[in-house]
Length: 296
Image (cartoon, rainbow, N blue to C red; front, top):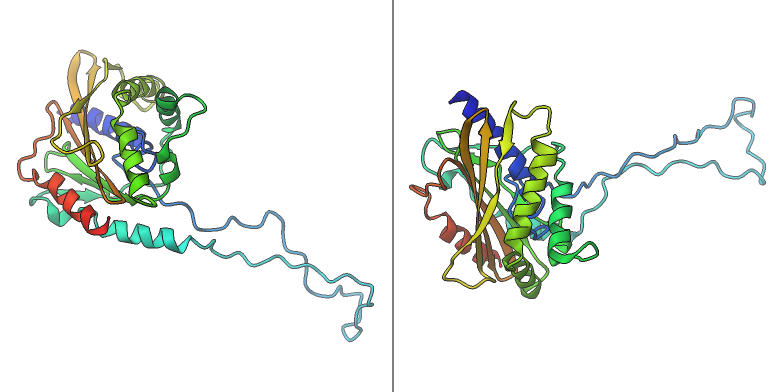
């Protein structure tokens, strides 16, 4: 069981990484279990040292420099680059709609997302985009990159089952609807499966830290039915068969996309050996819809 848990943990981090790069903030597809970090707000340090601001020692201190002497330059002080006030306000509003640990049964814990981890998910994102809109195409979701806020990983007492949640605000309802329809296109599931298959082969199985003997079976992505429209709810169930030296199992990744007004949300449910068990947290989907309706 311990070995199985380590494999699941490794795959959970890897899969969440890939999917996070393609949520509503890039509107391509399920995501990271980890939330996407907001854009950096700290300006980079100067690339050259400031020139001296004192008069050279060979010049008498009481003697003014000749009028023809050019003024000595000083480097501008390093300051935090200002974030767009409207974006900052939207991100703070989005944060009010996030799930919290108080929404889960006793025994669940929240583990902070590691925003500084080098996840290497860019190849996954590029493959998915190219499959969906071509090499030169651009998704509406690309315009939403960097706007989302997210939770850490809410993990059940079994140490395997987990939930993550992200929220962002588009410019307007039309932009949010367009992002949802990109996720809902019939080409999205096969493109997602192909991109994941390639990602796991190139970035995960080949990773020197991967469990020895790890192989990935055929990844499938199925659209699950919803009574609501494509511009309100889209759900995918991802199945990733794995095998490690004859020990096999299936990793499940259940991903919901929600929209209310201009608010977009992604709810990700991760489990192993069986689809996510909603007992005790079956309210999550309706709860997310209610919360984003308040801000959308």
